[in-house]
Length: 412
Ligand SMILES: [Mn+2]
Image (cartoon, rainbow, N blue to C red; front, side):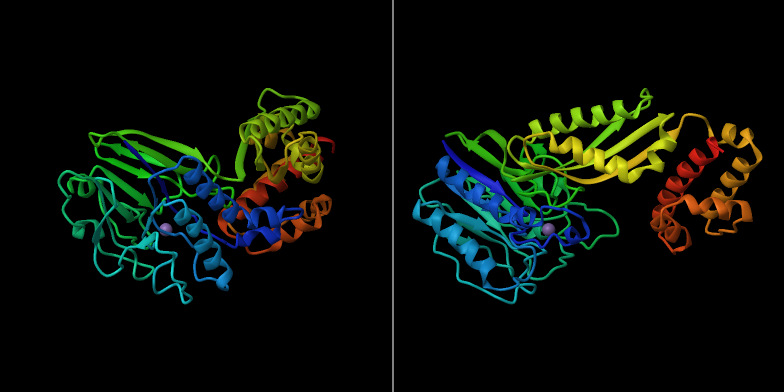
């Protein structure tokens, strides 16, 4: 029996660029998270005494700012070397040979696969053959898998490959290939990288994306880590367990408040949800986005006081002992009454709703009475109404404006 770790997309020192735009973001903790998660990976390899480690590309996020990124990596590799654990790695689109201008010689326990030709490497002392090829440049339109060598008989054959598989249309091609191409090769395990969402795509043979080690923004929510793979003496995969290694976790917490009529209840529900998510994140920093949905009588009240709602979310988060950072709060509720019913209520409401509908199509021609109403909007929203925005941004903004104006008209 032997065991190995399969990781990918570690993106060490990813700069997490959007963070400065946030007020109160734990920037240092988040910026250090990719390194801390990588240290967790090395610690797991040492604790579990695995036989080897696979890194399936995008080890780095891009060209190093200075040598400290590379020195961090080689230091971690040397720790594994001291424990006799070999490492096999390929370059991905983020750390292709042409992307990295700085270079350090890795320790002897690290094998970096060629970027010119697919090659095979036997793991010393084990019936294991690893086949791989790295990315020479950022975009690789060729199907690299087709050129991979034939399996070595009597060995557990692993294909180490950075690929988008059949990929998403409109994106650069990253060594595209199909599951059938991979299955046809006759290997036992395909250790893939590139897709950040952890997933097991097939079990015969095993085709696995371990996911990235550390979520970097709200579009990478949930646990992140690697796979611990156990192979029996007759070379069958017995288990490919997911092991979480992230130190900060992103969570999009959607609350349906359709049945709720009091703001206090909304706040309490947010508190409950934050406690549940913090407990699921164990001791990690939790970066939470609160999203309120549902048709509710509170729609206008929530839209009218977004800063108050944000502050209340932070207030609730502060009561939870584990660290929670409120990344954002979105009110995606709708009014309980249909817009048509509201429009029938009185003439001014009808004009406001019609004007905002026209504004959604790009043309904002405000009658005098509506222009006056805009004075109740925050300066930020008022400027937004006049600004040129992307269609979705504009629709979101007008939805906020509609909610606020409806609430004002209710009390009119
Ligand atoms: Mn990639």
